[in-house]
Length: 508
Image (cartoon, rainbow, N blue to C red; front, side):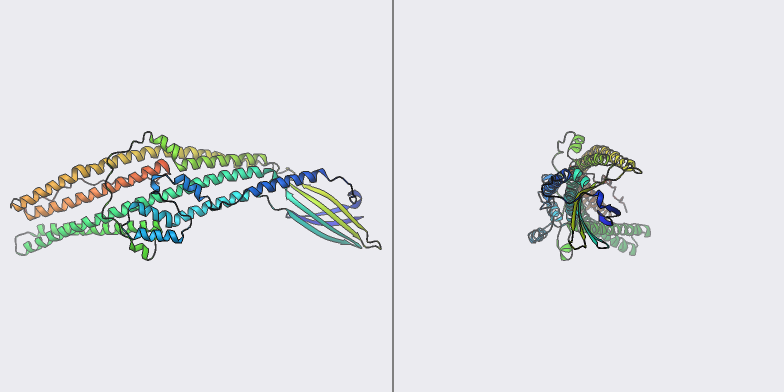
């Protein structure tokens, strides 16, 4: 007796004619179980065991990230905080209550900064992807009821993805490799934040220090302009001489305005990196001056070798390349047959006769796509291109790391030599010239205009020294990041300033 059967399985719709004459009859007691069903059950059990071993990390992988960056000098001995808590916020308030040094600024950024939380959230997403890749897809249960005349037919089928079961170990290993690369990327983000915070702190303190000296220079220019105005009123000075002093005052005022805006901008940049808002954003105070220069240059040896060995972006690119290579092998293995489903079928038929005859049929079904039109060439080509792209990126990152290490080391030495020259030669000579000018003025051998001009020149030299010291500490941060973390985004150019700007000639 034939009955049409419509069955839904694994998200597809199929119509089938079932002939009872060609189906196995009811199973009898003592029938041997079907060998494919035994194998299917064993495979399913193994997959369930493998899937049960995968679970989300309690901390989202943050402990592994901390192990990668914990000893880095950029971290200031601080543990990056995945989610701020009450204790960490109390610690932030304590740090803000005193003058904020660079180590405290880094601690606040790593505890309270939103960029750290974003990096750890991204890592948690990768951890979820890892667990998902190691989890077997849920089986699909199908049920149908059909009627024809006085016959009722019920069909049940439990199916699952056999290919997913077979490839589960490869999928899990590939996802694990990607998660390891994600840990390196998260650690890299943490180090970049620490370096950015250090640079922002250096710029903020230097800008604040420059504002103080430029205010003194403006006051000296105001005194000169006022004196020139009075002397011009009594006829002792010409209009040209008075205009020169007014021009000096206008220039000093413009420099001060630019410096004040730079101080505000650099402070706000530091505030953003530390994740401060509201009353906290305006409460903290910065030190009056930058820290002193180190006594000597460090002995680093081969900076290129250090960068290629320790840089996190190099290690991350290598880990990603390993993961892509693993996915290439899986793609090649499943390029032709990329789907396979096995189902256990149970079909029960009720005859509406006096005996209420019940017939049960059991069996299995295997769904396998036939590779007629798609032999997987495009998937293979895409996977191979992704691998070549990943390998090229590994080489590019290696070349970049070696080049930036050389550039950063040269920049560090140049900035250090320049800052020391200002500290040991330029500024002491300026102080000596200023002292001699005061002595000459007291002995009536120099005019007040010469004294004012020398005072302005000394202040500008001090400001140039501050900029040289600022550039050194930025170069120092760049070097540490280049050797252990990642690219600083671009070497901070050393700003040139005239060491000994000639004072305005006297003899008015």
